[in-house]
Image (cartoon, rainbow over all chains, first blue to last red; front, side):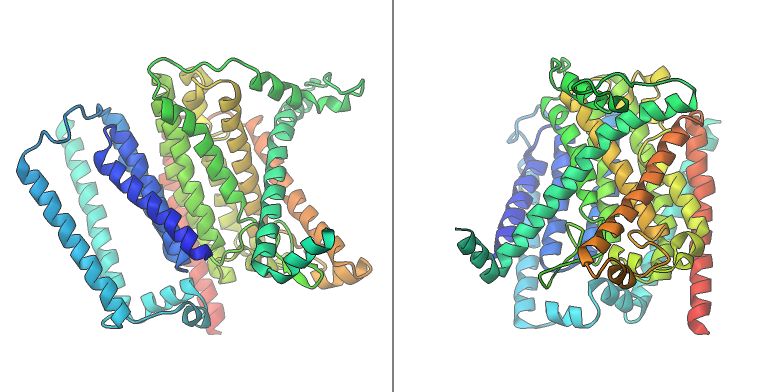
Amino acid sequence: MGEWIAFGALAGTIIMCALFVVLGRNPVGCAIALVIKLFALAGMYGVIGADFLAAIQVIIYAGAIMVLFTFVIMLLNVPPDSRSRWDRPPVEFLMVGLSVLALFGVGIYLIFGAFAGEGVEVLTRSLVTEQGGNTLMIGRLLFSKYVWPFELASILILMAIIASIVIAKKYNTEES
Amino acid sequence: MLETVLGFFRENDFWLEFLITVIKIIVVFGICAQIPPFMVWFERRAPAFMQRRKGPNRVGLFGFRLFGLIQPLADTIKLIFKEEVVPTGAHKFFYHIAPVFSLFTSLMVAAAIPFGPPLVILGRTITLSVVNLDVGFLFIFALSSLGVYGITLAGYSSNNKYSLMGALRAAAQMISYEIPLGLSLIPIVIIFGTLDLNSIVVAQANVWDWGIFRAPISFFLFVIAMFAETNRAPFDLAESEAELVAGFHTEYNSFKFSLFYFGEYVSMFVLSCLASICFFGGWQTGFISQNDLTSLLFGIQPLAVLVGVLMTFLKASFFMWLFVWVRWTLPRFRYDQLMNLGWKFMMPIGLFNIVLTAVIAGAIAFK
């Protein structure tokens, strides 16, 4: 009962905010709507018992990435969009429609796959608690079964950091 | 009538749990609401004593002066009844929502703080934190990382250059110092092996088990980052009055201004509590275990809980005093000094500290 109420409220918030991100006129408003949307998604993870994922979602997406987004929007001082919503080339509508449909299809496929028990290992809440909780289980899996993907992802991030430093350095030397 | 109500709660566990949570929320909010008025008074009286002045000591109630303790009440009444002026060209919605957002995040963080040991009443165990999470640490970081939005929105929506500059400074500073703050607490997580704040306190029964003795470098980093994270002196560049009028809240007045004040003091209080939990054993007295304390106090468990709560507040109030003390002792940093300190000094030390702690913890576990 409580879970259903929480799910309804969170799902409603997510859909409303997601719509506002796309349809809103003021870029800062859109960014803040995206923050609320990400926060509500973290709440959704909390409802299904994935505490660790919920906290990480807020720390990384809402607390770090979106802060930089709003920063850039404020610094560039982007004016609110004054064009009509329908005054765009039809190709744009087609592309958006197709990508939304594709995403929806993948989502449906995954959900039905999970319910049929194919491909996705079904984890119930009691099973997770037995293993010592959500965070402990993720930690164990990351350092045993998924250690290679984990390390490769960290190398990828390291490459991105070095690349960004190199690009920033280049600009500096050109100016001076 | 009373019997039927009690009977209802005895039968419906969900609603009893709900009622307990509501009471906890009210109590924690009440505690947090008492902090700012007291701190406003203290922040004027303490430097007055340090500088051999008197400070505000006149305002009293019914002829009793009470060391001027009623001064904040008078200030608050003045703030509430002031005219509200919204600057022209301000973004109305964000202008009104920004102080609320700032206060909301600070108060939400307070929900995860365990103020005392679990209370046992009528065979029912009640934890003294509003939410009892396995990932209390991450919850605190998640919500305190959202605190930036209140400030940036205030600066953006005020339609004032000083506000925007102050907000950008504050946001850059808070993002930069969140990293050393997080890094300084990872050794604590390694040492105690849990993200649950209550378990961390339970593990610090003995004085020599306290976090400050096990991870001294962490404590050093945490205290510095704590000042920067709350935008307090010597890192209060966000509102350096000589350059930016008042920073992000230049255009705010009356009650909305006091909400920013409220949020700042609550986040100071929460970080003080976190410091006392991670490094000074939270509600533990340090030399006597909770069970011994209960038997010493004639076996009345709530009394032992009260001692625990008082310990938390005593330790937290030391850090609150530290905030005031440092503010009236050290001059303000320059902005490049602040950034260099954060990224080039504290971050390498924090990373080194994590590696060191991990190696030592691994060696102990291996032995």
